[in-house]
Figure 1 (cartoon, rainbow, N blue to C red):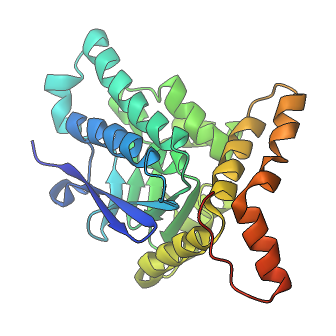
Figure 2: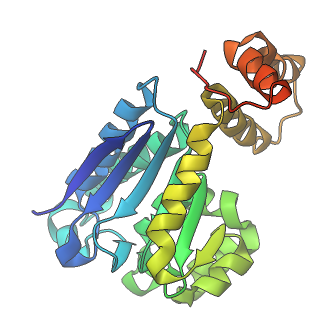
Figure 3: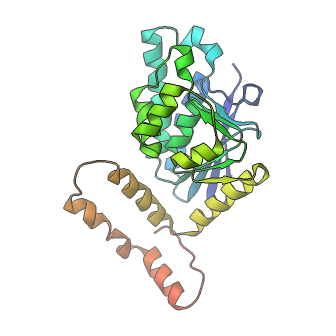
Length: 259
């Protein structure tokens, strides 16, 4: 079946594109596998500072999983278990990637597409973007790990609203929920997401990675350990810290090397 995951690099920024525009970037099994592989590979790229995740064209980020594939790939408990493991690997690859990830959301962001977006660190959408997870109409649940990804962004009550009502809602409701960070004019989504990635890339890359790590640690209800606290001081031993504060004192723009 058609559909692929495309990766491109511009300087310190990579763009990963969900490419199946003829079906609004609905994700088939091969694309879920491709996401896991792409983000695992990008995690190992040392000079990378930010990743943008987007859909091909401006009609959709992703319209969920490709339902037409279910008869062959997701038709009973055993096949669904296999499919679910692949899907979970994709979501975890985004979450576990050490580099910040920005979701550039044009148009529909539905079902598995919404779950992919929730695994990103920042989400920017257009005014006409639409969101939802209408799986109740398929007799299908939002799996535990998938709901966890959504609830970690919007909270338990909003996650239940999304799953139980199964309605498609607009960008302003998404903003109210905290699902997206920013709503901009449709024709400026690309520029705003790229500018956001650019601002991230200008900062010290090790610091960005630490901040992502810290945010994930804070989602764990376990009390902070002394080792957790100690990690906050590791930045003072980096070359980037020396570069950054000296550049500030000299009124210069810092050039960080990620060391």
